[in-house]
Image (cartoon, rainbow, N blue to C red; front, side, top):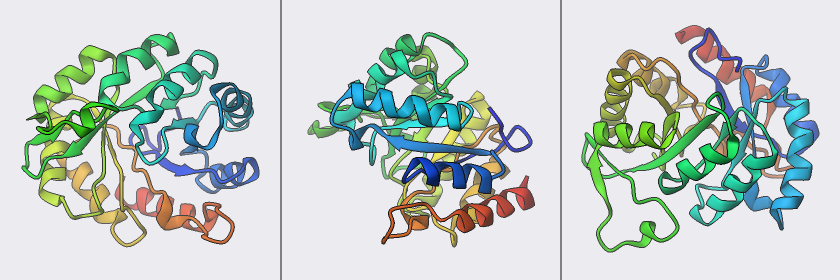
Length: 242
């Protein structure tokens, strides 16, 4: 993967194949371009399309759930059998399934955990059934990281952050990821205004690899495409901080 200086790589959505090409170039290829499994009627349709995206993006395709939708866990896992991308998004309970289907240790499989409201603890019950549990599984972030590694996961996808609403929790997660050598993917409510502060918090903690997800805030509402000029702005911030 083309991490900028081996540390930060953007994750943005591709509204179309042409848009995916545009944002990939705008980000100087230090971009993972997300295509959502939820946008397809079947795994077969997704596989056919995503293989084209994956080739155009030189492998830097991010196979997405769609708003962290746990109902898409199996679709993403099954797509992994056929599409050998560099990045897959997954809920906590389906990481092992996805890793096994990818069939290698090189691809990045993230693991969705959610803010708990208490710094140092995260919610790991993010699967299709467990998300509705009356008592969410809130565990120490270091324990969550150990479990993610056990399952073959590459990173914590911290979602939904609602921008800086859970700033202290983000600091605790970033500190734990740095101490336990795990990647971090901040997600949810990140925009051009708060991107720098969020990334600075994570870098200051010493996290070795970061994949910030910046989605709806940089999408043109009329076309549904990610704005290349905003990707350039985000990249300029990365270059300033890294």
